[in-house]
Image (cartoon, rainbow, N blue to C red; front, side):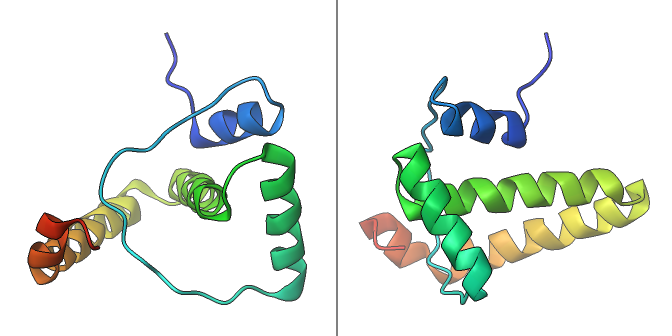
Length: 103
């Protein structure tokens, strides 16, 4: 049995043939989008009938998944180590807020 990719999950939601849910810690990450990307995000959000936040998380996941597949394994390993360090640091820094559900 093959694992469902982030892209397959997103496409199933846009096709209205599947749903997903995330339970876990979320970090606020303010960002600015180019105008054309903003329009596309709004259209995809509307079409999927979901929140912009959920769709943005899915799009980032799809992009990261595709990018890591295209990189050499040694580079992926370095990136994964840095990601783990960044997450560990953020968790330590926000520990009090996480306990209160504020992060």
